[in-house]
Image (cartoon, rainbow, N blue to C red):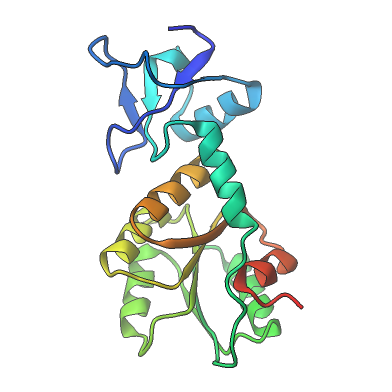
Length: 210
C-alpha cells in the first residue's frame, strides 16, 4: 500500500478503527490522498498514527469523499416547511452557554416547547417522559457519561422519527462518521454543524426560514 493513502471500508458498525492485517483484502477499495487537513482530522479523532496506511477507518461509505459530500447535501437540505402545529424541540448538550443560546434562538423562531438535557442518558429520560416525541432533536456529539453517538443509538432503538441535528466543537471527520452511522440506523439527519450553530442555519434546517 502507498504510504500517502488511507483505505475506507466497513468492518464494524459501532467501531471507528480496526487494525490492518495482511489477511484483509484492501486492493479493491478506493484510495484517498492524505492531505494535511485530513491528517489533522484523523489524529484529533484517533491520536497520532505512526503509519496512516496501517489502519482502517470504519464508516458506512467506502469513500471519505462520498461521505463528506453526502453530509454537505444533508446540511443544505432543510426540513419540510413547518405547519401551524406548535413545534417541540429537545436540545441535548452539556454546555451551559450552548443551552442558553439555542433556547433563545428556538423561541425567537417560534418554537413552542424547548426541552433540554445535559447528556445522552438524561436525554433518553426526557424523551421518554414527553407526552409526544419532539419534532426535532439537537444533539451535541461530545458529552460526558453518555455521548452523542450512544444517544443516537438509543434514538434508533426507540425508532425516533423526528429530525436530528448534530453539533460538535470537535473533529469534522467524527461528525461525518456519526451522521452516516445515524442515517444507516434509520434516523432522519437534517444536518451536522460545528459550534456555535448560527441562527440562519438553524432556521433553514428547521424549515422556519422566512
